[in-house]
Image (cartoon, rainbow, N blue to C red):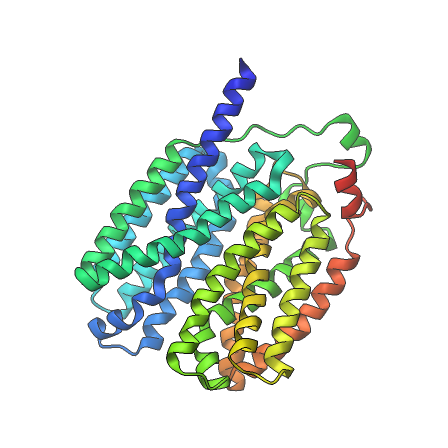
Length: 403
């Protein structure tokens, strides 16, 4: 009877997580609104677009804090709270009358709501399925990616037929209902017990303080930062790279956005499922190699439309796969029970990475400087991925065999 209840509970949690992640992924339609918000506020598009940089940083910071909130209130209450805040923030954004209010509502509040729900619900769902961590991550994070695609059509329709304020209002209500519904289906995962066999092999759960004392923790953080910076920078400026660097027409360059979305989701599914079959450090090494091929193409190849499309597809594929594989990879190294906290600090690399690429480009005057930084960091990260060992001295490949 208890097994039946447990199976039902974890399936409901998975369904709730997928619904929630789909709604949370809707924030990645943000670029649709920049031009209209700039007109409304009489501000340059670049200043309006900065709100998404703030959103990304707030999302990463909230993700690192969500573990403490879950411990105190439980996954259901925190997710429902995140849904209410997300809906309220989108409704407030609809009526922002100046740039400061936009940065507060669209940047800090939407980012905080999204980040609170994103990592916590993902980690909780993975804990329910310790035997299928890669597949479950692929389902949850795939839903997050599909959310940006699904809401793109919803938001574009209402922008054309209802205007800016109406679109934000409808988006806010729909996203809030979905997150509240998803949260109400979730249950906190039970504490994972380490078997005698695993204990004999040196497996254990590390607290955040213990994890941070190991060099492996910071090695993983560097790899994550590198792949996030590469992915977020290229995704953010793909159209501009296509036009000013590859000299494509605006329409041809804009097609890169669709290619990036497909490659991103493909990376999440392919590398997520592969990570249940081979060592996850090898999967990350594959992601780093594919990303490196893309960056090398942008730096050293004779660029035309097809080379440009292939290069951005490589980088987006690797970025999507990394976001899927990393929660399970961190749990392999430091245990499942403290995953939300341990991965939460590493996830700050998502927010920091989104800023570093843009800062380097603005200081050194263009894309090339950021591409060279990506190139150097990818080589260092690839060496780490191929040589890193678990804190107990085992290789990741041994962990897969033992499992």
